[in-house]
Length: 330
Image (cartoon, rainbow, N blue to C red; front, side, top):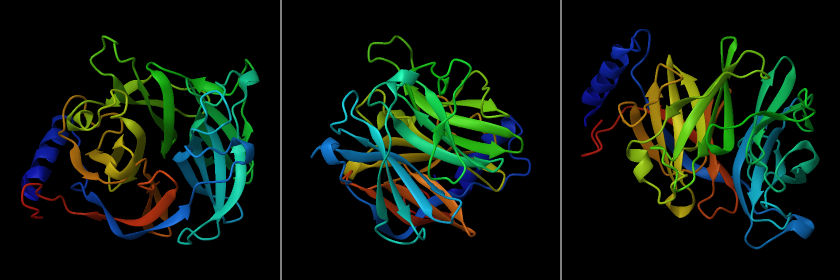
């Protein structure tokens, strides 16, 4: 499909729901140049395992200007579901080999968190505080910080940090986007292999105005070509990340990790609709796993897992024209 046809097709789809008004034609995210490694395989002391892997992570700038990177390390010897959070610190986003800072957080079973079940930290700033959303294997939880380095769990009326869970199992991979006065929390979950539901995995979204009370979930993306790109029934809608740019919302939806990493992107004017069982909003793919997109000093960057799953890398990201997948023409 050529660029003109692709844009026309997307705009035709947008127009059905009034989406084309005020929106620029969708661009295609492209990795611009070489990656540089910022984190490796950490020393966890007694928890260290040769099988451990830094996976889903969060990256943000702390109050003192340093860059913070927290990653879920899986297959450790911490017990339970083997996962904990480790952190690194960098002086500049473009520096290599950030300083290892040690284990940052472990699951607290006394607060209802699954032992060894911490997953996918994500941090935003709001009202002078840093807010961390993370998974405890079944729920999205909340923690808070003044400096962006040391976080304390925010407890609800039951004395627990859980915000919500479901409707599918293993609720995880939260990403929060603020648009005006509303927050959109994108996350994933999956059903058992033998579940009768058509969709074994999906990207969900809930909305809030205060980060505490959240709406009921809606499915914003599932199925389509991406669902055919992994042999794990629960893995085709992981690590959602949404960028709001030029009147459009860009969803990065992950299918594969490792040396055959694959991430699919979609563009929509509606932050609650990137396509269910169709690819009308699909604009491309990247060979990158669990990407986070950072806008810093007017430039976009992308952070992703190393192909070896033994660290994390960063690269520059640009937005190019749509490309004819058949012959490479713009």
